Amino acid sequence: MNFNKKHFFAVITLVIVLSMLLTGVVFADEAEETLPTLYSTGWALLPPIIAIILALITKEVYSSLFIGIIVGALLVANGNPVNAVTTMVNDGFISSIASSWNVGILMFLVILGIIVAVMNKAGGSKAYGEWAKKKIKTRKGAMGATFGLGCLIFVDDYFNCLTVGSVMRPVADGHNISRAKLAYLIDATAAPICMIAPISSWAAAVSSNVEVYNGLDLFIRAIPYNFYSLLTIVMILFIIFTGIDYGPMRKHEKNAKEKGDLFTTGDRPFENAVPEASSDKGGVIDLVLPVVILIVFCVIGMIYTGGFFSGESFIDAFANSDAAIGLSTGSLVSLILIFIWIVARRVLSFKDFMECITAGFNAMVPPILILTFAWTLSSMTGALGAAPFVADLVEHSAEGFKMFLPAIIFVVACFLAFATGTSWGTFGILIPIVVNLGSSISENMLIIGISACLAGAVCGDHCSPISDTTIMASSGAQCNHINHVSTQLPYALTVAGVSFVTYIIAGFLQSVVALPIGIVLMLGTLYIVRTINKSKATA
Picture (cartoon, rainbow, N blue to C red):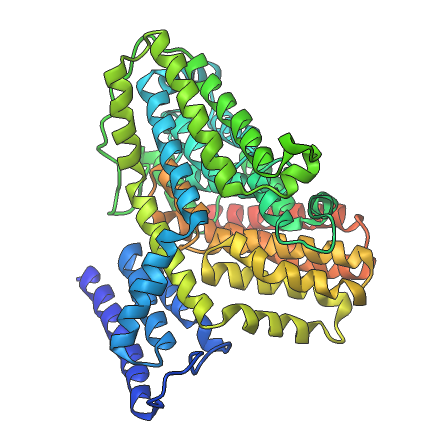
């Protein structure tokens, strides 16, 4: 009955929205308009908001995203259903799939899936799991190892999520760590680590959006002010060492520890999944070496696209690299080298290796579908003028509130990344605006403003159910996606609240002294939460 109520609510919501939009056809001009009637207004954010609300209510991502896309297409077409279908197909799905950047990311994603399948079938993941079980004796150790491995894989968040999830899932299961907690550890480590690592796809994405200044230099100088990323790492360490859990996560962890139930909810993906048969010839080296090869050649691929082998310096080449081409090229070369390494040693036969290609691709079908829907929804939002609307909002908010500018930028970036589900898209919208403000603010304030933009983008990314990184974390941990979002949200909002206050402090001090103040505030907040939890437990 509960399931029917949820879907009934979703259908009613859709009918109401469609009715509102379709009534606009009566009053619309017959002549074609260059821009939608509601272009660059608050309505531009309605489609992703509807998708997010429906995803949280129905616990179903695909239909929620599709409804958001339909609403967006109707708004773009000024309520004309025929034009809306054309817009959705041509300017939405086809345009998203045809994008060279998106194709590069999808190619990288598929190759990652294949490499993970190869590591599993070759016995590398199994060997590491057996080694880890001998060395890791406690839940804290398992969570710490998950965090540590996530810190080592800093090149790209997609690679981070899938690899850490695949490797640490058996270890986490052995210590009764809920899948929701594992997904949180993966997600909360991946983007923040990439966000403070100068050699990463994220650094390249940020640098590519800066024109007036040296993008990579600005990125590096902004690291001490990236409060959300840094304080998230502080929070993870606090959670690991104290064992604190709150919000929906508390129930998931209690069930895992006391009942051995890793999933908690009725929707239990992968619960009865049978571990794939793996080779007995593989060792830990068959996990470690492929990861090292992939990191090295992804870096080489990125600096190659930036002109390193044509005379550019390493820093400039990395700053000017094309992450999609670099990562897809580097991962393809890595796959070839891994093939030679595995097959030449007869760890896997040629036939077994080829089977991993299909298995790896199949494993990536769900995230690929969600990403395609999320990109299409983002296209609809872009066609409605979300970028100029947010840009105008930021510029007007900045007037007369310069000391609060970092905090304002942080909130706007959070909301935009949450609504659109993309950190990198948020970079593209807000970074040029912040850079343009550089002439009217101090250099320190410019750096803090850039860091606030980056931190807010990561925060919104963590909170959004349509975020690609959040989707990858769910996939890597084999956790119900909505469970991951709902359990992570209170943790992300806690760090966001402390970060917001720290950005206000940073706006007045304009000094790195704000970072230790933020760390103290973070630890104090977590201590209070821990005390409240203990009092509830004893009540």
